[in-house]
Image (cartoon, rainbow, N blue to C red; front, side, top):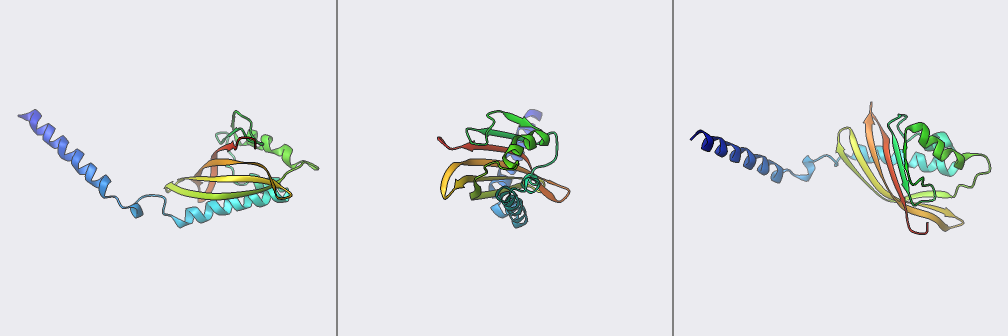
Amino acid sequence: MNSRLRMAGLALVIAAVGCKIASTEPSDMPGDNADFETQVEAVMGRMVDGWNSGDFEEFMSGYHRSPLTTFLGIGSLLATNSLIVGYDGIRAHYEPHFVAGAQRDRLSFTNLHSREVSDSAGVITARYALRNDGAVTASGAFTLVFLNLEGTWLIVHDHTSGDPGG
């Protein structure tokens, strides 16, 4: 009889958890925080401005200055086709695009979709395009993982993929 009671209790717990999950409204879920969206879009805007103006520090300001921050670029003009671990490595990867005389086509982002996963983590997916005289020279999609570190949202992982031929 004891095992039947345990099974019945377990069934009640499973049913209760299932009801709670099924009854969770989207407004109760992380990801509806306008502050997250506003703040990460501001970070992305600063990065675009930094790229387009040649301000390397402003461009890099979106990345967390940590040896654990990562970048994975696959099949894009700026790709490494390998994982870069650490802010300093990411910085070294992008720095040649900012030396005097380096060509750096104009950067833009489209289809920005942000989702706050928790009070301290969020994800952005979007598309990037690099243009020269109006012609797209490279494009692709990216996913960024942000962490809220002492009130500031910063990128801790960047996975950028280039479109075929771009």
